[in-house]
Image (cartoon, rainbow, N blue to C red; front, side, top):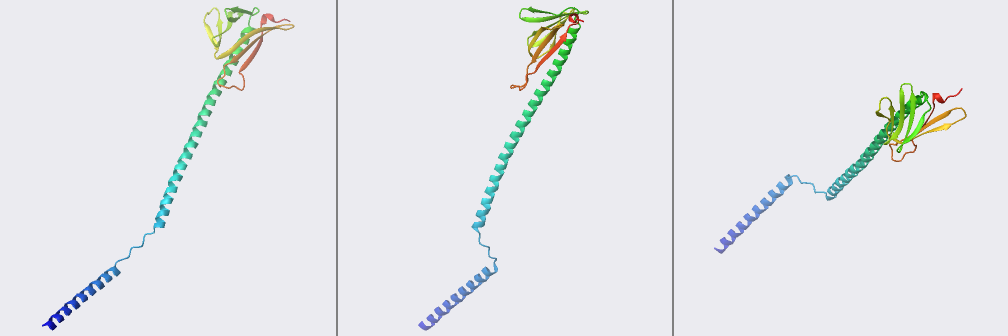
Length: 208
């Protein structure tokens, strides 16, 4: 009896061992058939992350540089635009001053009587008598005004005038009338003063 029981136990143990060995061999075969995943390289991942960080910093630097360049470009553009406006304003003022000066010279030359310079209040007026009436020039409220009688309305012949001065210069044979007028500059710091000087001789003051 004991011999049979021992033989039965040994038979069961051998069966279990064989089954365990088969299962182990099957697992090894399955593992051999499966593709092995490559090991992860942490150095490559860290390099890629650092490259992404460097690219982001470069983009931010380029954006900042572009903002600085655009700011400087817009500042230069607006400065050039302002200078262009000042230049156009100064050119228009020069043209008006030349036209007013030529008109004043024509009125002085056409005067039938010697011009009369008189002071009315705080204003200095120049009266010129011509065949069509009387012409008067005065400086008031930052502009040179002209009045041609019989019309009593004052007309501003030269606006934006900073100063105006009319005086007579006695020479040997004639009396020369001078008109010095200065315009208001469009720039805050003007390099050249817009000062004009006109001269004329009245027809009645001419001597042979």
